[in-house]
Length: 251
Ligand SMILES: [Zn+2]
Image 1: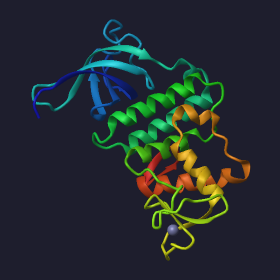
Image 2 (image 1 turned 90 degrees about the horizontal axis):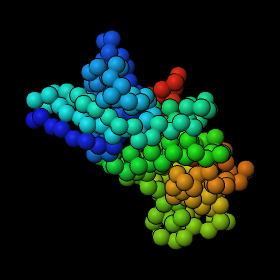
Image 3 (image 1 turned 180 degrees about the vertical axis):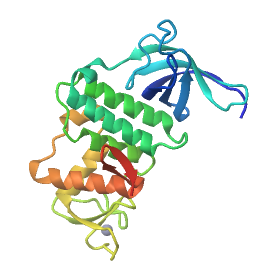
């Protein structure tokens, strides 16, 4: 690879010290996905990296590779947003870390990096500024991220006969294919979940909600356990990652 240099708004995911004044920074770039760069002297230079080297910060970095494109160096950074509300509230911080760990575990390459960057920044903004957020926000993030990879399910129509699903129907959700069928079109299929029409339509609304709509999502009590379970099943079917002992691992 040839030498490259670029300046871009990024999101700092993680960093670690490797010499007295030097650190490595894992960051998310909307054009290139998850990258790691070295900030030589970064822990001492307030001038070049003022307030930039903290996880969960949105930072404009100037990045350059060495002449053979083998590694990246962060030349300087300007802080755009450090989401201060997140750092003051442990529960919010925990949710943000959970989202970021999933992003790190799931994002390989550059596919849809721009949409995923935008989704992640909107999620952090929500956690930073909104008075209340749903306790299951990390699961909403994982489900939406799965959708952004191209697996947007449609539960409002039968995928075979295209009939609209109605509240009183009996439907079958097939997470691996991201489709539902009506009772008549049902075929014996491994992994088809029987779902009432009401629940299918509520789940469809949850999948379609943008992050700024998440705080206002009203999920009727009797369906919430079912919705959360199906979101989880959906994410696992596509991403193959489960949360275990503080991190995500492949199933
Ligand atoms: Zn049908």
